[in-house]
Length: 236
Figure 1 (tube, rainbow, N blue to C red):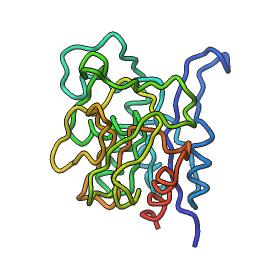
Figure 2: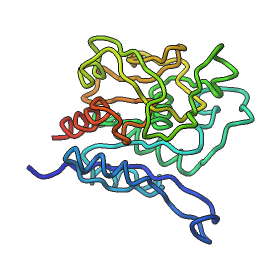
Figure 3: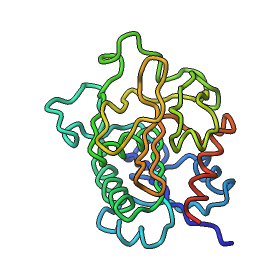
Figure 4: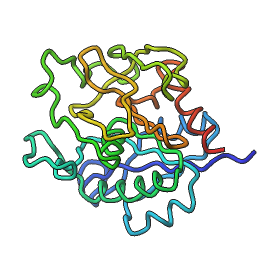
């Protein structure tokens, strides 16, 4: 059987560091995780007007993370926290292609900031800065390598994530200062951290519509790898 084509959204940086003109970036472990699970990874540049064309080329979508945030205005916030960093064209593209994928019932996996964007598209809201809104919060921006676990999460029984992970708990890495605040029906929370921070969401009415707050592409345990296997399986 041919490999399902999995589109991955790219990050974008201005003219500094790697190149003297703006450039795209994507950690290779995203692509490696897709390939290891049996998919064919395809990077998606930020062209919002071409979202429909890209959707015609792919079988599934991964909305990746990055060092930026969803504009709070998109979920009805009247103020923006000082820590919020925007990448407006990236967000415009991710909104266009993710909304199209969800409406077409294409399998979608949102990772870290991708989970947050997915939640906003589905009508939910976000916590703009965890330390300001969660009392006694865990350190959700770990200082150890992302290839190491940072904390445990509890997984809700009889959810898609529970079916994938095969357990009601797993350890995850962590690299975020924002998080899901509220979901909109019929989206449900499927995982939480010990401090109550939402770690996963899903849309039970879709074939495969899953968001996770951690970075399973590092493959630190079997549950991480199972997420990519399940995505590829849903695309076949």
